[in-house]
Image (cartoon, rainbow, N blue to C red; front, top):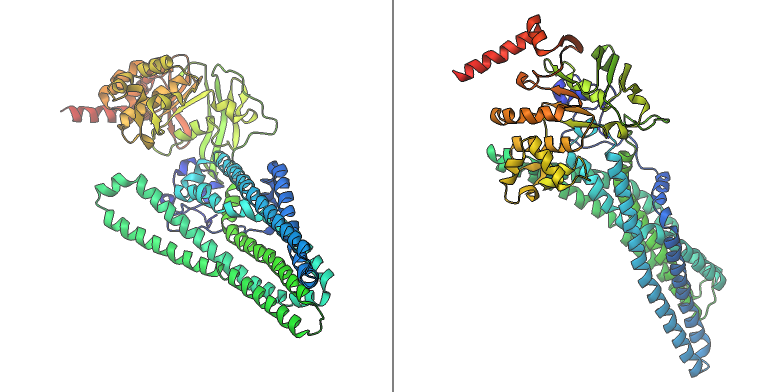
Amino acid sequence: MFKKKKVTDPENFTAQENLTEEEKVYTRQRIEDDEELEQEFKFSDLKRVAKYLMPYRSAVLKVLVTIMIANIAALIGPLLTRSAIDVVIPAADIPRLLLYGVLFGITLFIIGLCMRYRIYAITEIGQDTLKDMRSDLFTHLQTLPFSYFDSRPHGKILIRVVNYINTLSDLLSNGVINLVSDLFSLFFTLAIMLMIDVRLTLYSLALLPVLFLLVLWLKNSQRRAYQQLSNKQSTLNAFIHESIAGIRITQSFAREEVNHQIFTSISEENRSHWMKAVKIQFLMWPIVENISILTVTLIYFVGIRQIGVDVSTGTLIAFVAYVNNFWNPIINIGNFYNNLITASAYLERIFETLDEQPLIVDAPEAQPLPAIEGHIEFEDVIFRYEPGKNILDGVSFEMPPGKTVALVGPTGSGKTTIISLLSRFYDINEGSIKIDGYDIRDITMQSLRKQMGVMLQDTFIFSGTIIDNIRYGNLDATEEEVIAAAKTVRAHDFIMNLKDGYYTAVEERGSTLSAGQRQLIAFARTIIANPRILILDEATSSIDTETEELLQEGLQQLLKGRTSFIIAHRLSTIRNSDQIFYIEQGRIVERGSHQELLELRGLYYQLYQSQYNQLLEQNR
């Protein structure tokens, strides 16, 4: 999370009218701003990671059994070596020596077979776990309010779902399972070492406190370094994402060189923090390796010089092998700890996103909304973002099913807020909103929105074919139904003029289509969903006058039999509405038909005259 502070400048925020009081405490985060964590990673959070392994516990158990078999086989080798050197070779017992050689080879074969299964199985478990975690993260993101996405660069959200999850691959694929295996191997080896010679074992443990202190010294430095690196990676990803999305503007204003300089600076910061982080991370391995070598050296010195111990050559060689077996798990545990510290910087960001609470949720006993007729009631609705400042102030109206209401008024008057509350993108502070007598707070959001069709000014087209974009509103629609919907909204002709007609592939955000064409496709997408309640927010703003005239007939067909809200600045679009509400400062100050409001000669009349005079000026 990034810093919080009260908003004093409206330009610091995106879509102020559509933000709740809780959301407005977040300032718009710039790309170059580093995100600050409100809650740091705790080792108790490892339980959350472990939960993702629970669905695969049977597979994990098989891997653990396999690893333990391999560990037991590895422990047999030094015992065979000890017996061979101290007993078999001095006795010149060749058959027994050959038997030991065969047994030693069998243990190596078992170890190799087990390790082969372990590598494959652990990789599969790890990737399945990452898939589940990524799925949870993506699903959760879809429940968050619009302001979450408005208040931060999208690249900084994207990197959490892709890069940060991928960073956990080694931790989940090897770390957690190997940790159990290494602990088992560590204690089993230690038990055998104590059985062979207690004093040599104590010498073997002499340098462990030094290792422990060095690990503690490295821990905080490594974690801070990877936190800073994750910030720089996030910034770089966000800048690249925004640069690609805005490439037309970049080239239009010849900003390539300036953007390249910014990219170079951000990329250099990322490289610098990467080098700093890996330098600290790579200190762990040589520290553990050197301490293990010093320990083996100490054992040889003590054993050869017989300092406080009395051991045979075979026992000494076997013991050194066990010392290596003892330190190998410690090295692995050190690497796991290393990976854990590294991964914690990314887990913090992932869990932070998963812990972000949706502002609008279904009530505990919410019921699905049955098929509706479209009777809508607003009863003394009050909505505010800040205490004492109502955006909607006692709005009341009733719409019979099948009627069309147009909302007009100055920017920021509350028009979009009305339809946002009806769609339950935000909850009201006082009053009630009912559909067919059902309070929308008592019904599930999915059942509500499935019976609503919303078309916004900023039309979004997904990458894929045109027919798939239209079917987005109804996945079960046949090709004939798609074509019928396109004909209704006058999109059919231009679609058929494209290279592959309805199967023409369009790029991300429909960049290969004109703004008007995108809106016509969005109209078809809305009509094929067959909603009972229809919301058009500046839906014809990008359509030229000639196309709008052709669309009017189709638009009337679209509105027929549906309860509809239309927000439009072009009054030609709404003059046939059953009712027109003029909204000002969160109140309905005028209402009536087009003709009735003209005869009233109030605010609507002034708006109409203004547009009429502008049209006369343009035609001169």
